[in-house]
Length: 183
Ligand code: GAR
Image (cartoon, rainbow, N blue to C red; front, side, top):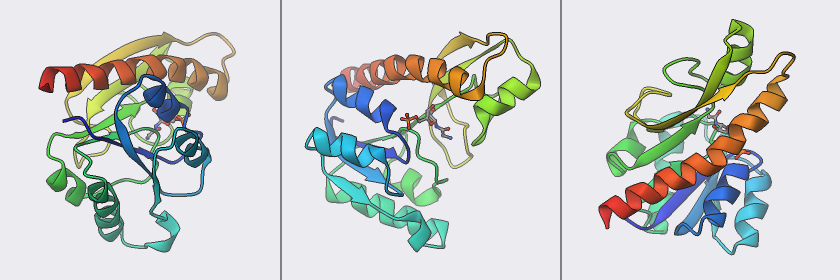
């Protein structure tokens, strides 16, 4: 299990950390034009754009993502800030081989606004979770978690940046652990 495909939608800083950790990334799939494309390009990793806006149906979109990953013989999928919900076909194609990082301590604060929701709830500690992805969103067996303390006056951006600092270490380490265990 050595060929990793990374799915990204945003600034790509988690992708950057995975690449910096020398993990064997063979393809990056994005659902929109985003900075992750430049980051992959700078490392010479092929990028596939499966444009979310162009495909209305999410199951069909998922099939196209799977096709893109399979074109590169991907064995392990790492979602790194991928903001489209994927459907059953990806879990059929990569059983127990789809990972995700989420900016909260699951099962608290699932969904696309986890950092804002933690601030709004007034909790004093949040964090990040690396987990096996399943068809249910932000669920699935937890592989690693780390807490991040919320500071008085934190903005969502400030807090998210501190959470991402942890993700940029914890996610590559967790992926490496899985690959080593499978070797
Ligand atoms: C990360 O915090 C990741 O956990 C989050 O997006 C950020 C991506 O950062 N993912 C989700 O919220 C998925 N629901 P990046 O674009 O800088 O790599």
